[in-house]
Image 1 (cartoon, rainbow, N blue to C red):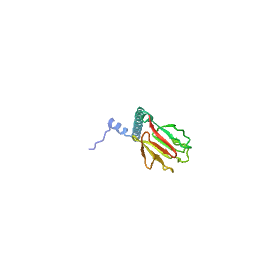
Image 2 (cartoon, rainbow, N blue to C red):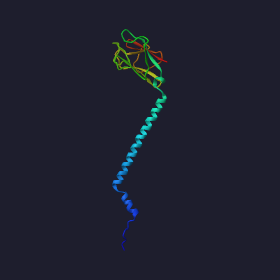
Image 3 (spheres, one colour):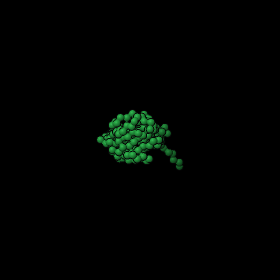
Image 4 (spheres, helix red, strand yellow):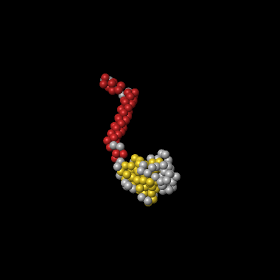
Length: 163
């Protein structure tokens, strides 16, 4: 005796629910939901980082200090006693794009760099022709600079001061 299969309404609904177009639509909706979740996570992480950075305060408040012109030399365009804000990265040279612009023919376009590395200020010569000196000694490798040290860029002398 052969039995015929009789479809029940629940079986009919199940086969109709597995329609390929419906499955594709559900996959698209799932993909969009995952994309928005990813974008939301990126936004949340960025927002938290910005809040944390704003609570820390500006770098100038964390490391207040100035770069003073100790001896301007004969033709540097700087005045004795002039001061510049101490930034996390400072460059010295004849190019107007430097943090401290020194108009002296003995100074290279980008002569030296003074930067904060961890808790120390490092002075490094950027392969200048006339060299950079710290307390009278030529700087060949990045060297730690402490307050009241005098460093020379060409014929101009600078001093690091903390407030």
